[in-house]
Image (cartoon, rainbow, N blue to C red; front, side):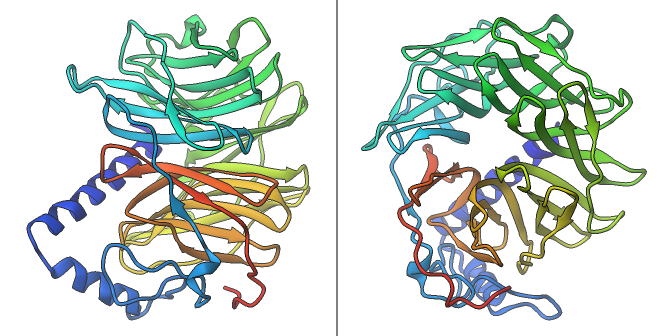
Length: 416
């Protein structure tokens, strides 16, 4: 099982615990959250304030709650249960796709979930039937309104599905990955005949898997280092000779960050920092506003908790950018979207409060706060008009979908 899937399962379990405790009337959780909000001895506490409870008032380093005006938007009425949206892609403010999975109420098998935003409401879209079953979609990317890809996995192989403007269809996978239980986690492209998808083969020693679409078929492209272990969780394509992928690899004891780059002829590993050689460092998402302004986000697992991880590429090197430490169990980032050098969103989960974690880069500092409701945000897309969408998993049957309307003043907020 990949690390990404493990973290998502943990988020679902913790969210379910919150609901259960609330139903039986226990108050210990509220007390524990209250203590966490006040700050625990010996830990840096930034980004949240309040007196406890599962749904804190969103704050940003002591700024008014209105500074981060995220709101929950109802998703489509779906026939499946336990629905989660893992990723999304936007063509415009009136043409957005969210992809994920749900559970068939009759067979209890995983099935793909596809939702579309038309500017006023989310609606479910018919998914193609895969005879293998067990379909879960992890990521999506749109070349244009009639050329959209979604990737993930079925029972034993990667899954690639395509929207042609009127319907979704399943496209065949290369023979070498069929039956390997590989999962494709992310997809990106620069043209209809130049699309990349990345993921992991989880059997045995985990290995990255990279696939390319040339306009007619998917093929596997191996990294230059064929011995490389680990997995890939995110990919961006800036040009036909400038594609980045991130994830995790292994040293002798734990996970470490993994960054690969495609220069038009081969995939090679690029040096990336870690907080230490003993803490687990994993990257889950990557986004860029330009070739010299690229962000990657993830989590750091220490012996006691998790912490958010953000890294930046300035055209020369990757560096870790300080962000925040959360009390208690901590938290981390799962997705990122960069529109400009001063407009970057990152989303994730706060394990101590069981609430979505949101953060905004204003060009000089990360401003950190909470989304709405309870759950885990797994993907985000920011638009040039100042809006942003985030999707994930809530404690209910519907995917968690949140929207940010308009960026407000943040210069009055204190820096991290």
